[in-house]
Image 1 (cartoon, rainbow, N blue to C red):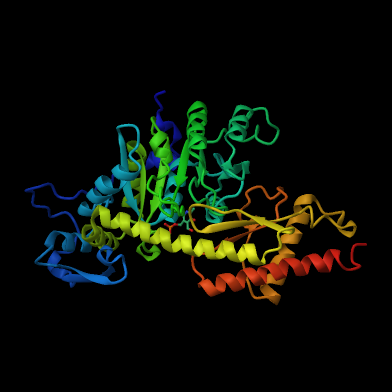
Image 2 (image 1 turned 90 degrees about the vertical axis):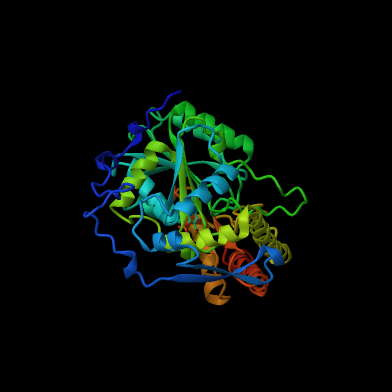
Length: 459
Ligand SMILES: Cc1ncc(COP(=O)(O)O)c(C=O)c1O
């Protein structure tokens, strides 16, 4: 199917054209641009001290770029630059990153360096969505910042059911097939896109199987909707076996038409403070996003891109791979400690939790069969009851035991879903805090259970 991606653009994006300000052509004297002359830049060199693959990241080595050794890179990193990004960094991203890990399955794809996945998401929505008019789909549990982004952009959101393996493709197909007759959806416009996190999903940690990834593409092709693949946890693969080498394919790998808009971020695999991300998608969308950059951020920070370029040049592709393996082993260790602590301290009859193999999160469900609705709360709906239990556990955990987890309903698009859950992450805390945290959270759940069901308060 040939898709005209112009049909997906918002009114705002249609009005975005290339800026009249142009960089000078080769051999041309330009008296037009207000660029500072490089003599005015005080920045003449940079030295990084970076953990080294040569010692399996146990010690650091220095990387030096100065005005004599790398004049172009240094000056370019101080200057305004085309909204596209720093030249050498761009080349590395194309050849050693996208082509290596995610190469799209069609020819006119392109990519753009952006300032983090959060900024990328906002600019993608502004490119595609007309406020108060267009509709977007997401997984039933979704990244809370996605939901918060949709509010000021006035995007109507509907969610797609998930099970323990993630988004349910048959639910999505039926939702779209029956869109115009379903009472809940028929008054809303047919969705333009679905927002998904297929790997190490935030908040549940679930990774979508290859089979479901293919089905997702088939369904979106069939119904002509776009996919935004937000994948910051892609490289945090937490599989301890020896056969840890193959990566799960990105949705881009199955995209033959250009309908996947992939977001990569360096926040979780290097440093969030750099604020660097990549959008990979069809060329028209990249042009429009780039036009937007010209009049907003101009470009992602050139100094951040220089730092990344220096690291990648030093490490090389193999060194970067070794870094990912190193990071994975750190997270495998952390996840294992947290799961072992959960196994030891959480009451198995009152909660269950998953054992994710990507990312930073574990999803804990409170067993609502055990926390059944008490007669005195019979006026509460099932979803309000589930929320009440979640809130009570949160209150006891945070106030009595000083342990906080993220409330599950913060990730729910449809607040009528009856769910009482928590997201726990092993990313930041110390190993001791993980063990103690599990113990305290277990006590909080047991406290609530005994105060509600093992005393005389069941009237
Ligand atoms: C799914 C998802 N997308 C985006 C982000 C933010 O990424 P960035 O730091 O690149 O803005 C996060 C961070 O928590 C995330 O979980």
